Length: 259
Image (cartoon, rainbow, N blue to C red; front, side, top):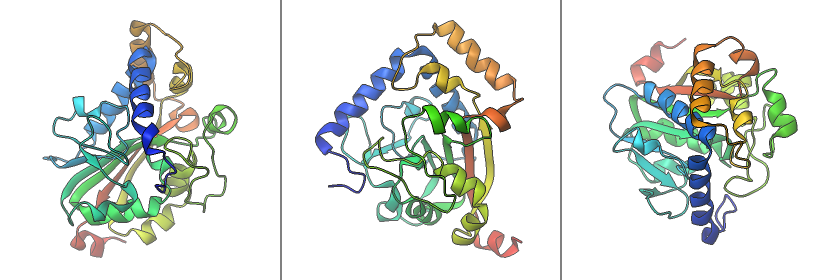
């Protein structure tokens, strides 16, 4: 059994099912397009070796030609089969320009292993670009009361609850690692500098129904809702459901100059 508790026989069917749900839900599809645009905007200049972890049913490769997609199990259309918690077992030191993922980090059973591997495999100036759940003062209640995934309140708990590709999770993990326990992040991963943890999307994901419920909001209205949310930043810090998280891999000289 893999560390995620995944049944290999079910992984591909689950991922293909997710892909169909995204395509058939106009608002969810527009949310993915918006998230991907935010990720592309944060890629380091000249990046060509870009790894996506937990590609699943997504379609980021449509926005980034040459993207290396990956999953824990062999799935049709996926470039690499790998464990995102052990990236240094698959890639050479300083061989990647960027590592990215959408809604993946909070499912990793060993997030410190992922950060350690990112610190090793990214070149100086390379970046980790993630979009993850975020516990804002109001937005957190979606995860506490309505969302199906588990969450762990203790900010020192850098782990997940339960098992499975989607069932094993800790929705509060990104907030714990990149927000509440920033000092631990800096101490344990001195070559990774957090440059952004920016909340966004005030309730849009809730309106879409996510992967569980297609609310069937028409495409034009869906597009308008996403564009409006982009333009109106007021309330993101209080009610955003996700955060754009960017870490930059420092060079040795930068590290020596850091306070």
